[in-house]
Image 1 (spheres, rainbow, N blue to C red):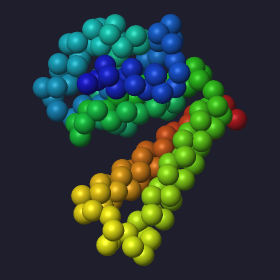
Image 2 (image 1 turned 90 degrees about the vertical axis):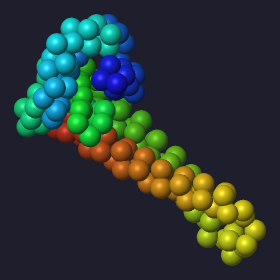
Image 3 (image 1 turned 30 degrees about the vertical axis):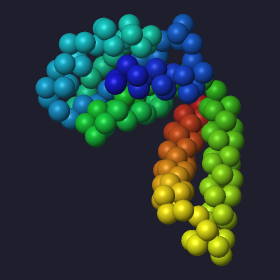
Image 4 (image 1 turned 45 degrees about the vertical axis):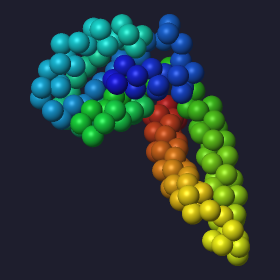
Length: 157
């Protein structure tokens, strides 16, 4: 899951395997942290990244990282400062955000229609409500990613 998280971040930022950012992991479970520390070189090889550093405290993470939450106990922080163009990533994220907002607005209009409750089957109403909630969560994640990119931009300004 850690390797997948690192590769996911690299992929979302259009980074190639030639670009090998350092990765900092935060793990709050001592046994899992020890395992990650033991397997750090394998994680680095499989995820095509530089050094893998394991921390038990989030405050030790350097600035300039993009975060991926693996689960409630483990998160990976890929150090990308100086390796990507934050402005380009912000543009891309804003475009994704606008698409999700438009989709959510269209779905909400359909759900707010007067005949919706009487004409649409209950299982579809439940699915649509779940889709709206998923879109809300996706918007939150996109907002967080935009904030991370803006923070990457600030030190170089």
